[in-house]
Length: 67
Image (cartoon, rainbow, N blue to C red; front, side, top):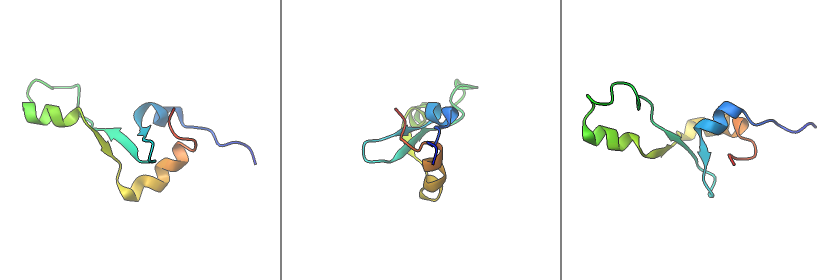
């Protein structure tokens, strides 16, 4: 079998933790940021785990984890 290739777009958008969780950033971060509340802006700076239902799909995009 040939090697599986990493999707480069996914590599830039997601990070795989040491325990194997796939983390993502929230959207809506750059446009119209001044009018969002400070609490909302702080929440956007954190990374969030992807939904368990999506985990299988993202594992295919990042077969060897994100380096």
